[in-house]
Length: 443
Ligand SMILES: Nc1ncnc2c1ncn2[C@@H]1O[C@H](COP(=O)(O)OP(=O)(O)O)[C@@H](O)[C@H]1O
Ligand SMILES: [Mg+2]
Image 1: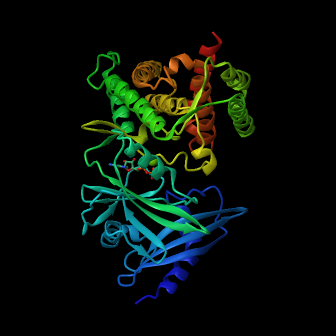
Image 2 (image 1 turned 60 degrees about the horizontal axis):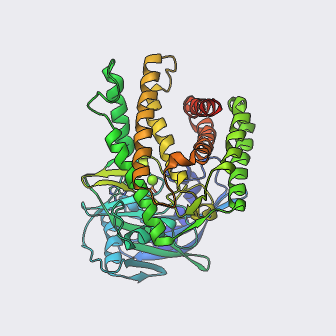
Image 3 (image 1 turned 90 degrees about the vertical axis):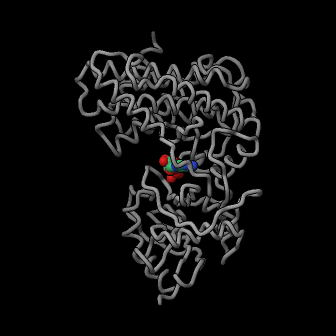
């Protein structure tokens, strides 16, 4: 039988090699210099299940990650063991504290126990386990002190009866130094949900296969869904406002926003020369955000909204994953921001869905025209839906054109940096959008 400290020693020694191969590891850009355990909790002695918070050092960067280790299967990743995963659910169901970790279900929730857990395989930045067809438990990999915004916003939305989220059912809380830190969130699982990206790209593929037909004529037209999705996003924003309030951005807030966009542009253009021709038009578009008419509402928003963060269920659209951009600092992720940032994120995502089939064949004019047509149609439908359900504080995004355009361009600049570093053949997707949006703005 392995002793907990032997397991911890072994895991910590091998982590510098193992971490970079994990999809959820956020530090793939440089080698891991060292790993040290910050905290160990023995959740079960037999079979051995150890919860570990480790500090991963990479040059001058130090970040905490959580792991579940066992000597049963692959000795790091106990999340692959269905029985051990089931233990986590049982601990939540029983409202238990074990060796410094607090497992709790939400008030008025009664959970079924004795279910096995299996890791999901879909695109994710953390690790989620599904229990039966009822529950999904997300284990946050990179930890931040305090309550995770995903949990905070889900609870707030549930409190005001929001219909466009999966109900939060429980949580696991650990510690980082002297602070409590959310390490897990349990939610209702929607077994029949389809994610928005899969639906949208299927619709694009149908259109491309049709040859002569237009977007509104093919069977897989997405515009109705896009409109309902716009309504759902606006409703979630209105619910977040009801739950947590709203403020008006002052001149200082707007100035900081514009400066941050310009600063990002300056930094990205340094490494990506392809962006250089657009710099004057981009700067102008960012500065124009100052001229947005009327008061600009700021509130809690989703923060990382795209078609992969929405699920279509039989009852309509749900938004998931309110953690914000995992790579951004926590202060930025929890700051009050304009809901139009989420709108811009979704508009960019429609553009990506439309153009992803064209990557590697930019010369196909027929397909390019089709992609543009799909994108225009669905972006318009989404915006229309949003306007229909928007709270009065936010209003119709089309009436905030300068600001929305600036957010969209800022997002595209971010994408340029991302594609340049990770998928250079995709660089044309954000670059052609920047060309188009700045071109249209100049007319
Ligand atoms: N309540 C749910 N019901 C069904 N599937 C879900 C649910 N929540 C998440 N998923 C699936 O898990 C994936 C990852 O969830 P997400 O909350 O985005 O985690 P991450 O922070 O790892 O990105 C989603 O893309 C979706 O496919
Ligand atoms: Mg996600």
